[in-house]
Image (cartoon, rainbow, N blue to C red; front, top):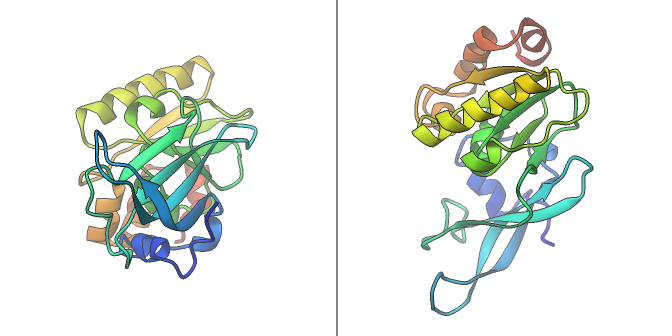
Length: 214
């Protein structure tokens, strides 16, 4: 369903948040008239939406996340719940980049894409909520996991649970914490170069050497 996001309100939505590199986002699509049903009662609407494929470790799609947008993509749609996911989420997520021995994992799509804009060589996963972040399945061969923490109690608890699980599998887990509420806030406030400079100080030396421009 949907079309590639290039030239659509979905691209405008991400650009407004400082996010680029759209050729590396095949998991994202755009639908010009995606059904939206209000919670409770109310008329069904058809609104533009960014669609994100939720997949398992084998690459099978298990669900879809929808972000309904204003017609020009300047912001999320002015509705009660502009973000919704359906399908099997537990253990799965929205994936960016081919699997490898290092992975970035966070909650929101915008947060994860903000970090991936700064670290395009490292694959990433958006788990879509703190509870689902704590429960992601680890790909075979994973050696190191970067956990993106949101600055809220739920984010801290998810990080702790995920890092404990990673330790059981012998995976090194490192936390990346934003200065502001999340990494998209940081990207918009401080810019891409500042984000890359900060990551250079906090990444494992191997990952910094291959991922962060000097």
